Image 1 (cartoon, rainbow, N blue to C red):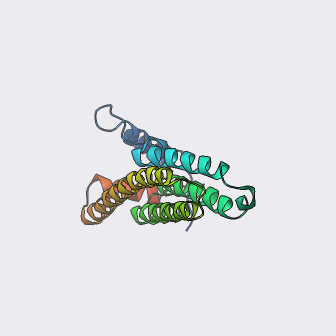
Image 2: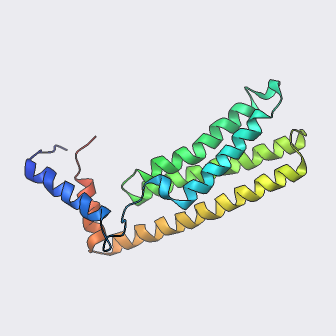
Image 3: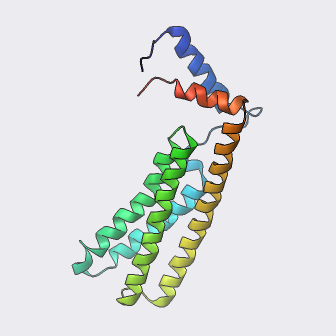
Length: 171
């Protein structure tokens, strides 16, 4: 696919992007991933899991510790990457990866409990926090799925916006 770059085409895209940002009578129509409540809560959980990681025995540094760090980072990294995608199915896929990383972390907490690295009270508190993240991820997935089906069914502004985004110049 080739793209013809013209001043008019660039101006049209800039105007469409500006209109989206300033949609809804001055209300902010676009959010960064950092604005999403699901990301904010997941970020706090990631921090809590990194704190767990620092308390592990030295011999777990490159095993369980590495797994906790990678899964914790994956939890929020996939949210950020998914939010940056223009198509709802892509966004959904990345949030499903986040959910999978969250489940890995819950299993890592089970290991910490089984090996007595953490008390049952600490694990219960962290699992409760994980459950809150899971509820928000599932809610956001429901939202994305509903938006995905409504865009496919409509000929309105949303599908026009998706068409505009599809025609953007590659980065």
